[in-house]
Amino acid sequence: MAKIPMTTPLVEMDGDEMTRILWKIIKEELLEPFVDLKTEYYDLGLEHRNETNDQVTADAANATKKYKVAVKCATITPNAARMEEYHLKEMYKSPNGTIRSMLDGTVFRAPIVVKGIEPCVKNWKKPITLARHAYGDVYKNTEMVIPGPGKVELVYTAADGTQTRELVHEFTGPGVAQGMHNLNQSIESFARSCFTYALDTRQDVWFATKDTISKKYDHTFKDIFQEIFEKEYEEKFKEAGITYFYTLIDDAVARVMKAEGGFIWACKNYDGDVMSDMVSSAFGSLAMMTSVLVSPHGYFEYEAAHGTVQRHYYKHLKGEETSTNSVATIFAWTGALRKRGELDGSQALQEFADRLEKATVSVIENGKMTKDLALITSLENPVILNSREFILEIRKELEK
Ligand code: NAP
Ligand code: MG
Image 1 (cartoon, rainbow, N blue to C red):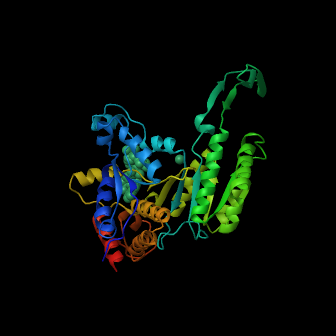
Image 2 (cartoon, helix red, strand yellow):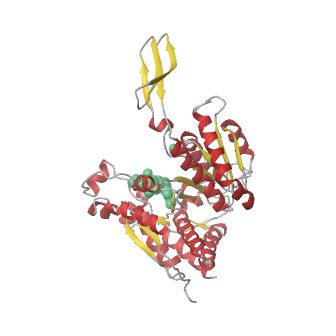
Image 3 (cartoon, rainbow, N blue to C red):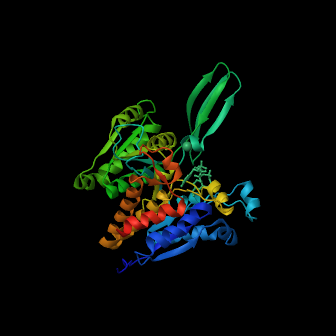
């Protein structure tokens, strides 16, 4: 069979530990036999980041700006232990953080739904995609312990020196106070990322804040979303047959629990932190969760939501068998290949991505899976495969 051609390369960012092992097997067994794979390769493995003083991470992000589509393997974010383990010249920043700030994006995470791995919420029939704003609010706050009676104020000093004051509270005893902020530009780019992703995946957008209580802060989020929607997206949404729905955060939570899924839930930073953990664990497993960084400039970077699975890697190094789930990493590749196919007008590439996803899901639905899923499946007598066997089983299914 002739291999599926690719016209434009996509950016390939290799990574660390167990996911690096899976990366290689996935390429050899599931991609290269079927696709004439064209990638611009960047080795973000910690050793090479160290050799290049982390320049390779910036280079990979810049290449993503050029080619618009990237696929990334999980990478180590160094801490003190890693400094020693890898003899690092410095404690490099998280590659995801570096890439995110260069591409200016929002992270979308969605569960991979498979029969036999049922969400605990019975009525969730389709995935719920969480879109988390990743700037500001309580994550960039300033806090104060108030020791006793006194006045706390917010003071804004304009460039010309004029001051505006708001009383926070007249304390009669000890307490606490907090100041936080956000930027219109960041909220705008968050809104555009959500609406662009919705058009891309043909899903409705839900957004919620507490604007009835926070009449300036949260209301600004609501207003910016509404304004950008009306100006730039309303017509396109009509054409695509999708909607934008705004409600209060408590109402949104109640509705999500009764909904059947299949929409994008845009969340402010804190709401997204809390709700994405709830949604992902209710759907089963972090290894069954896709993650894509969407930038308002039209760049897409696909990855798995989990880390490098260090514990399994150390077992692998000792020559012991591992049963590491490669589904999220396979779906990072299919996401990137499908997007490449869309941008290049290659139907064949898009269909290959669909087929590979289907084959992956079929293997699990036929009762063959890695250990993490075997522990939670509702299927009877699941067959537990090791890391390589699971990928080989997908290849067999794909060849059918
Ligand atoms: P992790 O790699 O996500 O793994 C934590 C645990 O979750 C594993 O020990 C394993 O549990 C389970 N798990 C995660 N992915 C799995 C998979 N694909 N198949 C089976 N089980 C899976 O998190 P970590 O061990 O805390 O972090 C390791 C390294 O990853 C760190 O250096 C961190 O900096 C990095 N990290 C990178 C990213 C990224 O690049 N996006 C994200 C998070 C963390 P059991 O041991 O119980 O089997
Ligand atoms: Mg969290």
